[in-house]
Amino acid sequence: MKLVIIAGPPSAGKTAVTRQIIRIHPELKSAYLKIDVVCATEDEEIRNEFHIPAKKVYSGDLCPDHAGIMILDEAIEWAMTEGADMLIVESAGLCLRCTPYTTQSFGIVVLSAISGIQSPAKMAPMIALADIAVVTRIDLVSQAEKEVFREKIRGIRGDIDIVETNAVQGTGMRYLTRAIGEAPDIENPATITLRGIPPLGVCTVCIGKTNIGWKHHTGVLRQLDGDALMFRGD
Image 1 (spheres, one colour):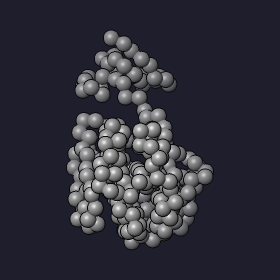
Image 2: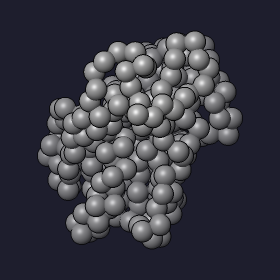
Image 3: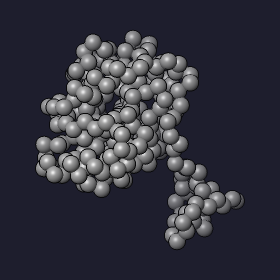
Image 4: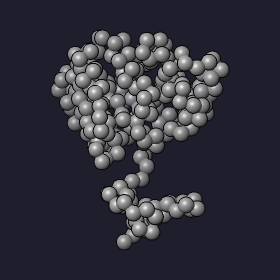
């Protein structure tokens, strides 16, 4: 079974890309998992449109990317039980610092061409560790804007493959789907690990303390004029 992990900011077109992948690969039985925070209907839409197994997981108070890490092994087991040839995991995309890609997966970062030319720099880790970048809504920008956006992505990682598409219509998606078809299957789920190291989440804000000011907190902290993180114990 193939594992495809799709990341990117909210409303970049991740689900539209997912639809095209499923539509262009009818020979692969797909399973779909959507990870979100409060509300998601994508699983119902995908299930009704393509008649494939689909689930969603709400992370609630937990970081959605961290929640995805915690449940991914069970998701793989579920998809294999359903007889899937490909599991597509779509992240919530709320933390531009986290990168949900794992070893033994095909990682896709989805970016919107209308999000601004500086947006690639704001999600650099998500781009740097992906296998391919998909730029959506290219029909809404000029050729010059597309070229600048492409160079901004390559400024993060020079050798990354870039697909430009109007994902709703599926233009330009053949290269992406061919790359997915050539991607290797999972070898051993028990040995899958993250490709990158997630940001530290060790502070009392993470466990619900609402005071402002680092002096009221413990764990990994930051000051206004401090260049480095510091640790403060009890």
